[in-house]
Image (cartoon, rainbow, N blue to C red; front, side, top):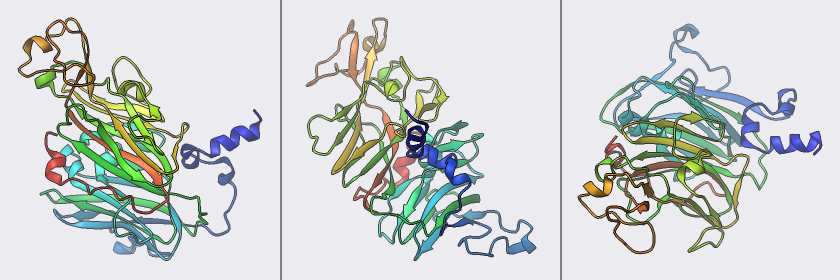
Length: 383
């Protein structure tokens, strides 16, 4: 393969677009204008940064009272692309990170394309901060939130953070870095993200990472949070369920079918902590809490008509397990129907656990028609 072909492939990936495209480092676009929206210049207006305290760090943050919301960035009457979002807050406990909400609107849409708890959106599952870096997100020292996913818009955008907790947030620092007047063609897609949560999941009904969505687009991947049920299933492995991607006419069976949760994120035989560009596990602790991610950057998943993404809740029980001996309710073998597993059984079994996720995708429409995010009381239960 020629150097030109290799470079062309590299430039097609989201990671390349955000880590410094070689040609873009030394070329000046004809029209693009660079802007930052922050507490020091909320509207990102020319010559309007640092107006307070004679420009000596007069407004580096904003407070966010319980029940209040703050517009991080807003543009009307221009095309553009959000290039980077950085946020940090003084209260980073799991309840607060699940109670803060981020919504994004494109081109004047009435409903948000992005709607998720702040922590989960930035890859911090279950509100459990950890130092990591991936191609799309990073949390350098477990104290901040960075997103590098390009988010195009044609006529305008609005990004809002809401405090749905019962506690005032004293310090919200942020930067939204974007360009204006990007020339977006007809094949440029809108960015979307959806938070899903079930506590517990339903027996033999796969957890939906993305419910059915109609349109053309690209599935970017997801981050997941799992709180395994140790009361019913002890310390047995929970992660044998397969990821299934139904697209473009798939009904009973998908076109894309994985082999297990740890396999999906590129590891095997369980999950420990690691952070790679496109796959990783940021939390794997003794309290049976796991947070992991997979991003389809070098292996794109395109859809032309529709998409639906699920993952199963299936575990594995070994011969030395005490789970079946101490079970106070029936445990069923994985498979059709409900066949109870008795003492001595070794193999796959059906589970119900606390699952949550944020899925990321591009779509040819600024709205996705998905249900609204669940209320905050349900989001924070069990954290």
